Each structure stands twice: as structure tokens, then as C-alpha cells.
Length: 222
Length: 226
Image (cartoon, rainbow over all chains, first blue to last red):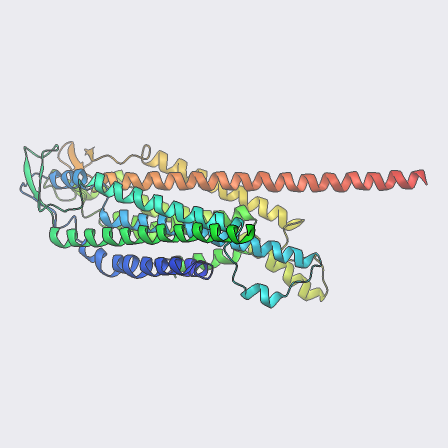
């Protein structure tokens, strides 16, 4: 059970997405999840071992690390990716429910071509349009919330080389040095940029869906 | 043998679940199992190495760590996930039993082997009750073992061979606390889902039973009239 399982679950949703949705999913898996797993995790792998404070006082390093990093960047990104991926499941559930209803009608005697039903691409209209649009809306909200959380927790997106700590039991203000600050800053900015791109893709998809529905309504009325 | 095995087992249960049951499975997979594997496990990875006591006395750290963490929170979390997922297998076994019976007797004994009625309904309800029970038991166990869901930065330890009461510092207490609260929240959501599914099934089948008995009474009273 790992990111591959999430990929399998979301892969099914891909069939019913718009083209922008498919691009979003690709960006998510290649530029975020894959980068997280193959690169970012190694950079943050030794974060507490190599967090060094200028004191021999036992416990000072633990307490200072906990004070400056209440939750690690890596874990926050993992949670962000999980939360941002899950609204797509609303769409998968809706599609499954629609198929279930069609099967029920088939059982009750209505003539429906089974093969056609299995392979058919369900169009995004009616109630599915609302589900799809809500899922995009939630995605945007979750992205924004996590980006703000990052900004608020770490006072910006830059990783400092040195932090000054005077939490007990440190004897007085001690200098603590963060490991690989430049590499961490680069990855943070990269992940921020890709989150921004994902938000733009989601906004574009939202606009596209709204315009599509407006055009359809106009065609119906004329 | 890893979490993928559990995932495959549970995917089999999906076919015979109600809508709420499927939501429960999705929540267990994504918000509990996936979060455990990709995030939580790493937070507790070096918990023993990073547990530091303010003493040079050999053995003191080991003894204090063992005293404050008889079972690591992450292992308890894993046990909870496994225990809570397994009652669903009762349903899979019952369906397999029904299918075997049909094969043995070479005739259709049930309207549909996967439909939740009769004996399978009882099994399903029992599995829901067991799931809810296990969730509550583990939450209570967490609460009792660790005096709540908070992880302190500092614990004072005076076990032998520590010379006197020494200060011991736990690593990443805030991050661990955040993940424990996340665990409690998802357990709570799962308990609510299980209870709603239980109520929904009991309500649905009571109404069905009532309709059946009232339509039987109507038929028998009509035949009396004629």
C-alpha cells in the first residue's frame, strides 16, 4: 500500500475527466508524487540526525527541533497530496453509482447493451457536472489551505541555515544548524511552483466546465 | 507480505458492501492505511535512537524508553488497522460458503449469493458490530496507555539504573501528536460510518419485514372475505 495504490485508484477516474483534468493528474503524479518519493524524501531523510545545536546539553536538540519543525515538510506534502487527490474519488463514486443504477434498470427489464455500458465514457453533464465541479472546487481549496499552512508555519518558504533556540532545557540561546538548507529551499520552491500550476489547471478546468454549460444552455434556448 | 495483502483482501469485500461500506473502505485505504505508510511510519522511525535522557548512565535510556512506551504508538496503530479490517472477511467467507453450497447441490439455492439477506445480513451486522467494538477498544487502549493523546516533550524517569529522577526528551512530540489526533479523527469518522450503516441496514430490513407481514395479513384477510 503506497502511492502506487493511489495511482491505481485515481487511474480509473482519469477516463471520465476532461483533458485538463488528465493533464492535472499527470502533473500530480510525475511532478509531485514521484519527486516526493525519489528525491525530496532523501533530502529530508536525515533531518533530525543532522540538526546540530551548539550545546552538549542533552535534550536541547530534540526540543529545539520540535519547536522549529512541528511537522516536517515531507509529511505536510504527503498529507497535501492525499487531500488534494481525494475529491476525485467523489467523481469515481458518482460514476459507480450511475453504473449501478443502470444495472438495476437492466435487471428490471429495460433493454440496455451491456458491452456498450461497460466501455462507455460517461459525459460530464447533469448531476455529474455538479459533482465534478465540486471536486475541482475542493481541490483548489485544499491546495490553497496547505500552501497557506506552509507559509504560516515556516514564516515563508525559505529554510534558514541557522535558528536561535532558547527553549528549556537549553541553558541559554543556542545556535542550531539545519541540515541542507539550500537544497530544502529549492525543493520547497519547486513544490510550491507545481502547486501553483495545479491550482491554475484546476481554475482553467473550472472555467472550461462553466463555459461549456453556458454554451449548451444557449444552444438549447436558440 | 505487507499492507498490499490487506488492501487486496479488502478490495474483495467491496463487492458485497453497501454504499456506506464502500465509503468506509475508501476512508480506511486512503486516510488511514496510506497516511500510515507514506507519512506516519517515518515519524516514529528513529524514536528510540532519538530518545535522549540527561544522564550518561548506561541502560538508563533503554529502561526509561521501555517504561514510557511499552508498545510503540505506531505499532498499536498498525494493530488497530489490521484488527479493524478483518471482521469484513467474515462476509467474504460467508459468500464463499454460499457459493460452495450452490456448487455442491448443483442448483440455485439463493436469489444471489452476494445479496445481503438472511444469514448474510446477520454476518454483515456482526462484522459491523465487531469493527466498531475494535475501534473503540483501541482508542481506549491508546488513551489508557499514554494518558491521553498528547505526547509530552519531556518525561521524568527514576527507574533503576538511572541515578535519580532524570529528564528524558522525546523526539518530534508535536508531529507525533498531530498524527495521533489524525488517527483519532479518522477512527471517529469510521465509527460514525459503521453505526450509520448498522442503523440503515436494521431500519431497511425492519421496514421490509413489516411490509411483508402486512401484505401477508392483507392477502389472508382477502381470502377470508371470499
